Length: 236
Image 1 (cartoon, rainbow, N blue to C red):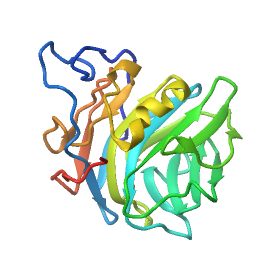
Image 2: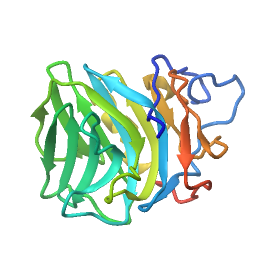
Image 3: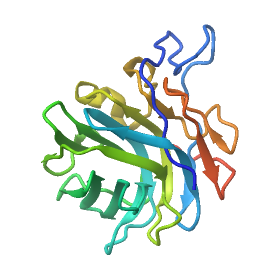
Image 4: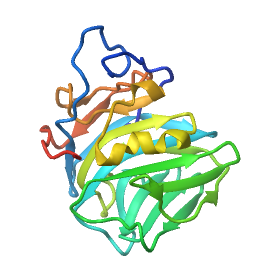
């Protein structure tokens, strides 16, 4: 099976708010498409995302189901050498980094089924890992010093694959805490070009199936597996 996620530093910041390689005079930023994973065999694969230092993961999800047993894989793999992000319930998110799993538990700013929400996971220079939902903390921080390796959206090898929407995925090798509010943007996706993502999948916008173009500077495109259409259901 192909590996997962692309990245690169230095996405172009221009007046038209496109990602890396955008041309002067190109279209302004708009978000009209997303990907919808069926929870059965839909998957996106890309080259490994690997970092032992500071990072930020930013993405939008619209889950249709939680799994109170092992959780459903939003991304990553159940393989021992890989890491993952899983939804277990409205109050619990699991994030495996290295050989151990961080559990983020939240009682008020909870995850909601069938609703778009923004998730951001950040590891700072002191190896503290923070989880955010819609611009606010989701649970307490944990300390993780080991290497992060993620390589898919959903995982068809696991029974608990992710069912729902996914949009505007970005990976940064920088701490984007100071830009958290701006990236969440009151619930409306905005251009990430000025924040220099290493990987940025628009998840349909300006894409041609089965390819998800890396709009960051990594040049690492994703490949859609077992599905070939984009959804017009997007965060608004």
